[in-house]
Amino acid sequence: MKTIKHLFGIADLSREQIEYLVNMGESFIEVNRRSIKKAPTLRGKTIINLFFENSTRTRTSFELAGKRLSADVINISASTSATTKGETLLDTGQTLAAMQPHVLVIRHSLAGTCEFLAEYLPNTALVNAGDGAHEHPTQILTDLLTLKQTWGSPKGKIITIVGDIAHSRVARSHLLAAQKLGYTMRVVAPKTLLPSQIERYGCEVYHDFDAALPGSDAVYMLRVQTERLTDSCAFPSIREYHEAYGLNAKRLRAAGPDCIVMHPGPMNRGVEIATDVADSLKSHILNQVEHGVAVRMAVLAALCGGQHEEKSTDSGKPLSDDKAQGSLA
Image 1 (cartoon, rainbow, N blue to C red):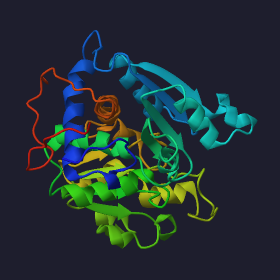
Image 2 (cartoon, rainbow, N blue to C red; image 1 turned 60 degrees about the vertical axis):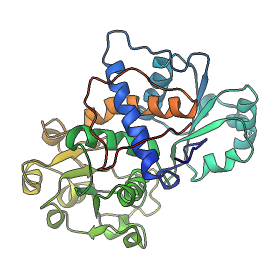
Image 3 (cartoon, helix red, strand yellow; image 1 turned 90 degrees about the vertical axis):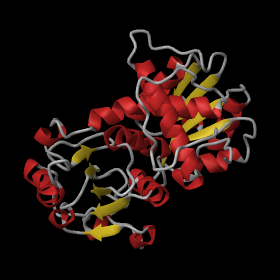
């Protein structure tokens, strides 16, 4: 299997690489549930988390992932970096790389940030923790682990993703993963929140939420990213948006008795999702959060050449019909 040095996006990964990372992530779930949550996998390695956008789940899970693998972890936010004094992104990246970290995890509002820096930082592995409206690969690997734990394989399943598709790096990464792993994506949004030529991803496109629900195996809700909206008239009002595109108990029943609910966070309760749905037994939102730490442990271990050798307590069904083999590093 082709090896990789960086994790830029789902677009750059093969099906085998995706499955390998998800399966490795599954093996780390048990570590995170111990009373002493520590493994020596990355002892002596250094991870720097460089976040230019606010984050709770992604940043914290990367920090926990590194520390639970015994790495030295440094966290830097834009507000405490020299970029506030006029330093360029390139200078910041080169400065940090000169300190010889093994991995630099970057979250930035501009698409392609990691790819840009990779040309100038030849000795540092780069991980995209979300770049603009481009991709969010570790979130999708997290979701795939959640689906693996739920179904064994997402192949043949229908995931209905609802909300601000136009600005969602999560949606884009899921659309790419669906093509590689054989599940169907239904996208639901008002026309103002859909990117042009969305059909090129091979997805089913709906503007009517209720029409998309029957047959859905999972309903994946997205918040409206008001910080990225350039059109103040993208939808009439929050109330009307909730009525047309909010997931409530009645809508969830229409999807079928076995349909699960997912959300990458942060949630806006009462906008895209009702509280009784978010906190219901069908909600896998907190499972996603837990699995996010395990998957990011897998990503860091793979890029640093570490292997988790302890046997998982889970039987470990394959993500698809074919068993994933090989290594990323």
